Image (cartoon, rainbow, N blue to C red; front, side, top):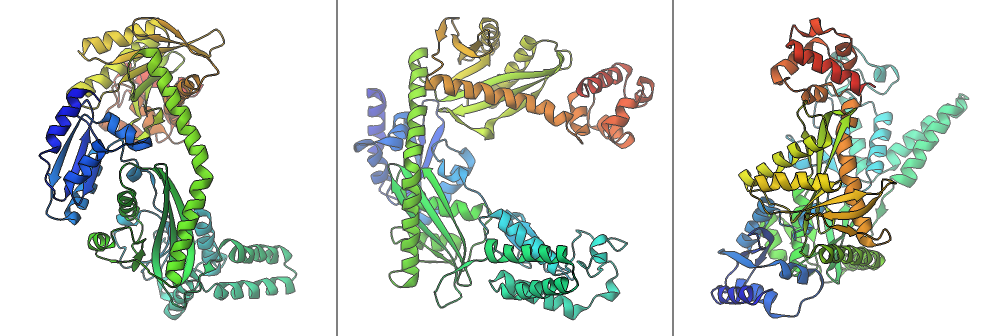
Length: 596
């Protein structure tokens, strides 16, 4: 950090009030790279620049050249504002809120003829309040096996929409024939639903006893194949689906969040307790920046925003601000002081520590390798590099080009920013394809003020670098460019910088490994476009590739032909009923190539 930046920040810090709010850290390009919240903005912001920092927080502070803040009336408002700004700006150092997932649940629909299925992202469900949900299931295989077993034991409705005729499930005894509505025994339906609910709440004996009876009948009838099949189902219940019962003496329903942190790594262990039963647990390990308590709090919020159901209670450690979580979720958040639940929380904390101890050595090793490779690249090029955008093209027999762009931040892939490009059909060589892709990409960067990278990587040597320089210069942009040149064995051997200097790369170095990874990633990403098009059922994507076929003509072609095979068999004259002759000829040429 230069003296001018230090002076600027010091002057701004003097004006920061001691009030709650959200703060936004900015880099040299004015991009927001981190969003946080604070009970006391002045104390929190001053702490970043007045104490000795290490690890990830030091990396963050080294990138900061300015900050802004917004004062709020309460800490709850600052939390809501923080979450809103993170969603809006997607800051690179708020990694914690990007990664975790929603878990599968089992849904029993509240319909006249109910269905049972595995679902995710419950925030998108329209009739969520009416249906019953069981879970979460950290193991999706267990959830699917559970649904499969129940659907085989109970003749629930299997189809999404009632048909006009009885289906196969009816004839094998796994459906009551809901298409014939007058024949349905409502009392039997209610009994089925109650037994299924009881089973999913942990009473496995209901279904297990049914399977045992059927298994014994099959054996008595010498139907040993059926008996073996039923035995396997029983084993699935006893092994895969059996939940570990926690001796809490109550039918508690809560999620419990334990954690452990060390060296800027945070391990969070979640226990899912439903009706006094441990449905499962999940561990997440992240790097974090700032205060660990804030990181845990943000993780919990993001966990439920991903679509997971909020239970009756949430259990957290005493360091976590349970009052602000209670206000945010309008739900009971509890900090146990003693007793069985406190012991369970201690167990979760212990599991979080064990998981982090197991992984921290490998994680630190990976980070060290990555940082070393990044330092080697910066040393070789003479400037700092954080964001890299790499490009490659793919084609079919020298025609029908597509382009791919991958993005790496500090040598970590940022897949949300990957892009594919459909290239004009009159492009016939790699250099022309590269020109089009680079111009389109960086014209958009210029016009829409999209974040620009520190470095552009192209696949090739002097010719490719010169083409990239020409395009970037024509747009008036200042972005560094390198090419990755291959040797006679088609392996990356050297870097060609923007001045056409050759920089050799040791094939045994970490830098070589990361550059090769980027090269492989963008190559595979580009050719995946054509692979998808060539795969079965991709007629719509094929039509998207041919210049001159817009949405109206595309719909007409899809309606008339419906498959690649039928369209390929058509003559130019037949296609001319929808397309002009040149476009029809171009389409048939393209279809011939992708089928080769």
